[in-house]
Length: 182
Image (cartoon, rainbow, N blue to C red; front, side, top):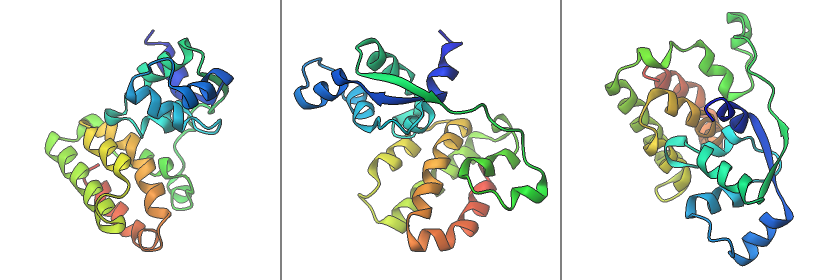
């Protein structure tokens, strides 16, 4: 099973007819987290992208449950990660995840630095969007206990910041501060 986890995360999922029926009827008795993932499946998001909406980013059990019950199906996959860009190309990066490639390995960060990164990300979301907004993003950040998990949530955090005029303007400054501990 461990070999299938990267495939689960790289695959892009769409709801099946059974999945559409489940959303309307709730007849299968899915767990609340599996139901959340099912609602978020849109034929465009990969398992990795869906993991940002699950506390601790552990989406594999929910995807497995939804696949086994016939609620979702893989309709594509995300290509394997590209090699790290050259330093000159790093400034021109357009995908939030590309920024992470320049950071030191996650295991080189201390637990204190992970706490600092987690608190920084939560505080910036609450400051830019206000408390009680973007709750699932805050839950995902809070549920991330390691630097590696936080780096998975970083993509959703950066996209959220870019979706707001103030967040977009401050993103380079916020990213620099966050990367000091992430």
